[in-house]
Image 1 (cartoon, rainbow over the protein chains, first blue to last red):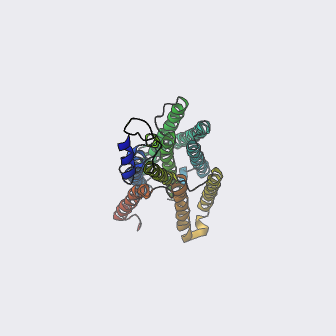
Image 2: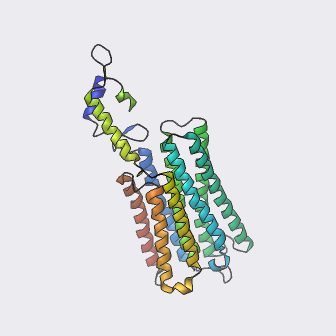
Image 3: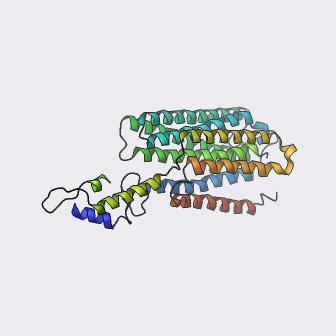
Length: 209
Length: 131
């Protein structure tokens, strides 16, 4: 143990603690580094999908273009729901940092509920568009639109599953190490889904074709 | 970290009080953790204010989308400006990137700016902006 103490004293510049109390060569949480790297790579995925949509948004049949099918008030309400879910997520993260498990679970559950509401709204919107005649293969516009917003919807769905999984794990006390870091990592993913929607809402829905 | 805060052993196997070197190491570690976790001391209420601000910006965006003809050439720059305000507000404050270690920023912005550069180049290739 004396050796340990000497190492700790002499080598503390090289081995900083991270969120989980483990030692890393960078002094930062490897999990958090990996999450940020993943989110950086996701920018490339959604960048490609948004660019493809921008290129093809004018390639549609005469009466089934963006200006004919969009329901801006409805999509604005969905955007508001997702934006508020970012607030509840950040409140869950601050509660987790205070080690308040009960409040953390409440905010995580509310976030999952708002996320589910957003996905339900997207399913409803897709159904309406389909009934109006806008199928996946109707035009290049419809294909690129459904692919972009569908990918985003899948990300939100995965986020909801992650949120509910974390709630279950906190209740059963199954999270090894730092709970706050786990909640923070899920939070980063959730906020990313929100910022992607901020881009989609403006570039796809609000800017006229 | 708890194993370090424990007392150090002497040659006879007894535990002694933590020595100064160990205390210094632990203090340094806690300072590092504190820096890594620094949330800029934002309270829940401040996050609520920011969310309300973002909701108002969204409402302005939607209002602008009904004023395309009135705004003319101003419409697109205004809408993009509001979009960037919302985007970076969430990234910097909700995602804590403003207060976190700069390596996290480097990793994220590397992907973001690479994506922006690559896809603007792609759109230019397809003459998107001139069309």
